Length: 143
Length: 454
Ligand SMILES: [Cu+2]
Image (cartoon, protein in one colour):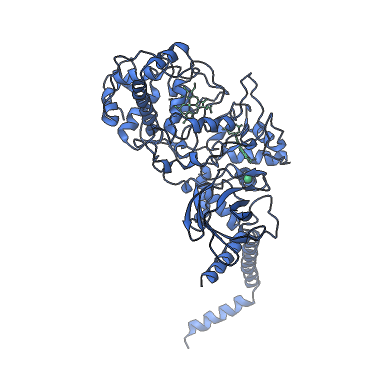
């Protein structure tokens, strides 16, 4: 049920992205994956982002919840997470320095200080370090 | 059968056979025919391409003043929406006694008749500033103040010029004395009892002047704190005054609102084809909305746009790189003891980017509201006209140092003139309580009579 709803939401998101895709001068690459659930680079984690209020606002500080679990579904808590990102086509980073400010338990981590100051293609990258090693995961966003 | 219809029918038959009938029929058919053709032609011209696509309409709406959120309270200034504080702030804004030479007030550079700026590259107070005066209307919606964002609230901003040697050129001890002598009642109504200033020298503060700085350092720290609190409250009162200086719809806003409501345009909100083309460029291939976005045409952030150094010899200006450090260290910032905010309220400060190459020579994206009426342009008035600004964007030259985010636009001269035509539409009236920007008459003779003209 949960996953059906998520697929549905992703479908809507993809449709919205297609609709707004022609807005900016420089178009992002066509085959970008805008999923809100992605596997980390080395496959150590499955990460899901849940922006506060679901739609990502422009020009406003807001929060995300980052959910982390092992590929077998075990939630991952107690790790070091750093946040980074920017606009690849504009060559600049995020306008703020977001931080993970709280472990909410059950694999959920509060990401505070997110902000996107213009429309277009953004990437947000989380570096996740635990006792067993580190891995990173990148999300694409279209504003 | 009565003879009349027969006679009528006969007459009709005669008429039908006549040449006159033939002419009448053909001319009616002709009228109907051309009308049908012209209706079809009109539809043919309008139907295939509506003026703005759905995405463009979303973009237009985001730029309209109707998208501006109501001004949120400033958690760092609990007097920000207190009308008594605002009335006091209004008097302070115009009061030249708050200066080292008795001649400078905020209004010296932020001239009410000139969109609260001064139309000159560098401002003149007690001395000459290193940057251009910024307009004030609508700035209460901002998160950072000054070209480099070195303060994070409007009240902390106001305290900068007051102790700057080239602007007001006075000290906080002097200003506390001015409050005690001329504004005691109004001040104490809002902020509570003033501290005793009997032991406090006329001039003392952490300023460039050696004597005043020495006097400040000799004061006991509790007394310094009391004076700094009065000083902070001066800023809070001025901010309360500035918060009431808002914006009213421009021709651009009226155009968008009418367009989106699907109403026909009239002479007050119609765009010429040049203006419309300029708007299309602004939100399209000229990329202006990347940075000049939202109802105030600013992303509230800092960018290196390769603006040349000022023609005048000035100290090296690294923009945001230094500004953010000053904001974080700021004596009066959101996290300071003089702020009314809880630590959680200071998010802009907490999550500010404090280092990196992108900050070097980056300046705050200025609002473009009323831009056409306030040449010269950029942080030190480097460009004399909008044409110079647009030709800069078109060429996107390398920055004097740091790295410019711009790329050349390759727009034609016609396109540049269309952009310029569009910028004229943003001339935005100021909205304030009645008489708000008139010089208060309460201290014209240096002494406070009692006139209430607001
Ligand atoms: Cu960008």
